[in-house]
Length: 479
Ligand code: HEM
Image (cartoon, rainbow, N blue to C red; front, top):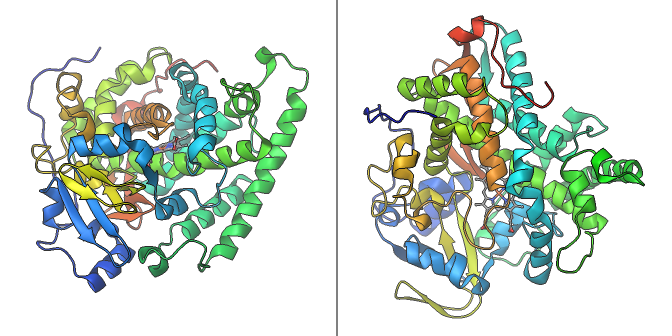
């Protein structure tokens, strides 16, 4: 167990846009939304619990009052549907997947997919996560001392690699780089928010870039269908014990517990794409921000390294649970730079939130980025201080003040997968490398689908002192 002495550790104020003193006017608002939506949040949003904003076609209500958030996302969640822009951005082309489904179709998928992300199943992926970290560390070591790398791009690679290992443990049977390039192209198209979206013009009106999106989707669907086909042939007649133990086998073999119906091929394909798209950029950004924050806070870096050295020498079973300081750093990075910076819903019927009347079709926005820095909810909200998330203080954080994974029926299904992955990868890499920001690098948060460092995160690698010795590795199941 880690020791939690009450020493006062350094705190650091990481880069963040200074909120404008007044609300932006319409034209500036549109231009800023297009450039970097984070820069739109003026001072009042960080101070007021609920703010109403009139848009040309609808009312919009920005909610950061915990009991009103509970009403929107939990108690009266049936009245608040995901809004079309968010669904398009997060789940474009994944019509049959969990992220974008609604109503009965969503309920059926959520029930069926829940066992895939249950605690025991996620724990069984720890070895794959550690193996992927070891491979990355070996590649970094081969670059030689003081190599400069783009940590943001490297984290995208490792999270995609972890998903590939946990979804298709026997490989994707094709060109991995080509797969990655197509994935990036897909994100570039769906990440584009045009004026038509901002003005609330219906999704049935054609948007630029749709043809490119369709081509990219067709490419993905082709690859995934081939992999599913191969796996189905492999599984025929095999008992459960002999099947590859990964998410694809579970998708093919887990029926809906309520009806016994297995998922259709289209649903399986859409959910694989959903896991890949919802799971890799978000976790990659969490890791990139955590590494950046640690590079600026040497005492926390030293604590994570000491914990990693101690715990990685033990068994892989229960590893993520033992990495308590590392996990606190990850949670603090998720507070300061939540990858999903804003959630939005549309009210179906009239409602009241914190005394404010909500009309049908109003847009309700809950922005974790603002919520996590709200002046009424946090002390010194702009400081990097992972001790907020250490066990002795964690319970004091109000449940509805911290929502990196959302909350309620539509809470992120991959939350424990992502937390386990980020904790293991961060510990394994910090144990082996000291990372410092490349000279002249400017770090700035940019919201483009996910909240990422604008222009990447160039850092210089230096093997940590212990890495000069033969590395001590956690015992993985693979030996
Ligand atoms: C640090 C990493 C991650 C963050 C911050 C994150 C964040 C979120 C958030 C905020 C939502 C709720 C959206 C809403 O209520 O409108 C969500 C939903 C979802 N996430 Fe994640 N996510 C992460 C990792 C993952 C991973 C690894 C997977 C899968 C492998 C995943 C799959 C999903 C799915 C399928 C949904 C939709 C759930 C539903 O609607 O029932 N996410 N995520």
